[in-house]
Length: 257
Image (cartoon, rainbow, N blue to C red; front, side, top):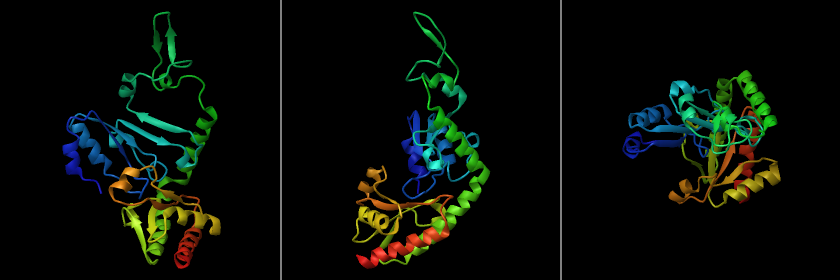
């Protein structure tokens, strides 16, 4: 959980708060509305990493009053290497691009240049047009399916996985225990079996692909003395039968080792 009282102390003097919206370890969503208000009360801007949120639930950046919000395309059925940065327009106007080149300048002279307005001034040179089109189509598809429907479906799958895991001797769920607070992921461990071994056995014997390791947050695991975890991720294309097969496969692993 997130300690808002501690955050009120930590944010003093900060100019920018950069924080995740939803954890990619256990799927827990932070109380971002309260975090944003607190940061603003202390004169700080807020940058939200919403890569683990955007594909799974509806959000309203304007209602949140967030200053910047970023997310990737590959987690929402889009092409790899794509992503989006949302920002309040007046803040984007104040920012200068890191790179300049074709497509960002309104006019140039031998002594200077005049930039276009956002977002064009941040898009120098040839862009990944195929990726942009693919990401746009992915967004349209998710809107057609309905993010509320996706969220409901994921919770049903996570319920099956959670209840199944708790039936296995020596199993432990990493992070938030309540599946209703975990969105589309579940991180776990089996006593006496390294997470990498769990991952490889499931892949080799059942054709089930999950992830293992520290999930790009080594500091979180190191501070708790945990050597990583296995993590299963569910999305709109997964079925209840697949999750049941996943649980059965874990039970086989437990019996074998």
